[in-house]
Amino acid sequence: MCGIVGLFLKDKTLEPRLGELLARMLEVMSDRGPDSAGFAVYGAGRPGFVKLSLRAPAGVDAETLAATLRGAAGGEVDLLVRDSHVIVEIPAASEAAVRAALAAGHPEITLVGSGERMEIYKEVGLPKAVAERFGLATMTGSHGIGHTRMATESAVTTNGAHPFSTGPDQCLVHNGSLSNHNDMRRVLARDGIRFETENDSEVAAGYLTSRLAKGEALGDALKSALDALDGFYTFVVGTESGFGVLRDPIACKPAVMAETEHYVAFGSEYRALVGLPGIETARVFEPEPATVYFWERAA
Amino acid sequence: MTTRVIDLATNTVRELNGALHADKAHLHWQVLNPAGRHAIAAGLDAPATVEIDGHVGYYCAGMNKHASVLIRGNAGVGLAENMMSGRVHVTGDASQAAGATAHGGLLVVDGNASARCGISMKGVDIVVKGSIGHMSAFMAQAGTLTVLGDAGESLGDSIYEARLFVRGSVGSLGADCIEKELRDEHKALLFGKLEAAGLAGAVDVSDFRRYGSARTLYHFHVDNVGAY
Image (cartoon, rainbow over all chains, first blue to last red; front, side, top):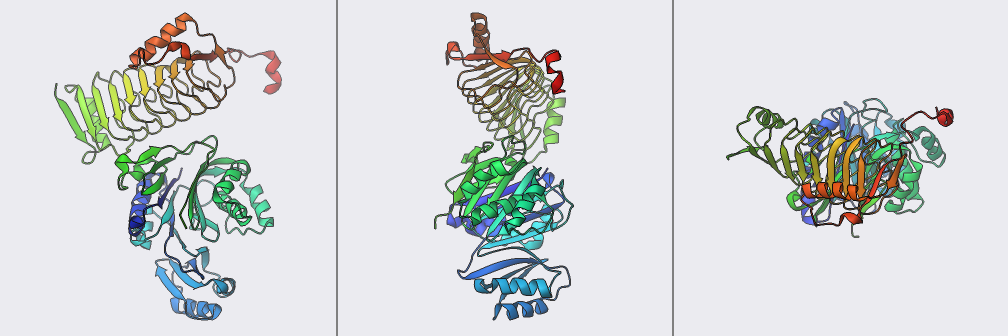
């Protein structure tokens, strides 16, 4: 069992409240996944720059890290420390050099995700505590997804927590378990997708990344996942401009959605949605099995 | 008759259910702010009427006996699961496994019910005004399932003696489930169930098709030995 949530705002005036709303949704799902939690938020981005979400063990010296990053990026870098995570904004052109410098000089640091707008945070612990450590309630943005984990397929570690990101501004949360993930991981690895863990959900993220890299739209990538991925799943995925939901044909894993003219929201249970504005009059529905749902932000 | 009102914004579900089980003097109850909480009004055993204003979570009105439960909203997984008698009515949609294993009583869904509606039903009457999802009436043993809309894939897989009436289309029939002739006795039975759900005259019983067990899975057949 796990809990997943997602919130995609259509109404820009709600964007300052994204983190606050998502934090509440995440906390309600603690009963479904008390061992770890994580979330991705799509906030402000600067064209030509990329944000790296880094997880650093306690005791890493921010000044040393900043020096490494400055050297590789060829200039000043913005460093935002939030508990165990550091968000670094660098010129997109320097990303490869920065990644190489991090791998060489700071093997203790994990790159959790990257993108123009996406930031990812995840940790072991109760969802409420995780959200508070990172200050989720103060974050702003257009959409976000979150996960509360009750581990089944791999260990309770921060690396096993969701969301998983395998491509720029792409992330995925998963409730369920995949049965063909080992095979699929080998196939995708040959295609050049990099995996950090043995986790089944990371393979689902990698699969979507490989399809999106081939130029497919999110909706088409999700549709092809129905044939490629075997097992139980409800996925909620985020891209720079999109938000998607997919359930396997058996649909054992729960899902409830709510849509108003202001937002689209997803919860493993309706309880997660009760704090949203105007939920009383929202269209509340259960997404159909084996049916792709996705929404794109107007450019 | 006085109504006892319990607000779940200030009381726990355990307090509500404890009161419903202990207070036999009140026969009319109103539950406010259910907010999708689980197990609301479960385990009732009195001829009371319970009205719930809003969406409920899992297992609402589970194991119900004698009581009449009205949900003004949607219901989560396992609505009225293992109901023994009484009546459960949801004005919105019901999620998966509505009426699962229920032995008796009447379950009415004004909207749609999703997958596995009436799974392993054992005597309950279920009336869904909308459509039902896949694998509904799986291993259904007794009772009736009446659907005014459509049914999803694998309807009635491995069904025993339950009777299924569907007015719309059926995605596919499950193993050992077949269409059967809708004779006058079945129309009379169906009319009775529709009447109980407040639908007498609202739809024509002749528009329904009847499905049930081919009874080929009841006994071991030597031709199937290779399958074991």
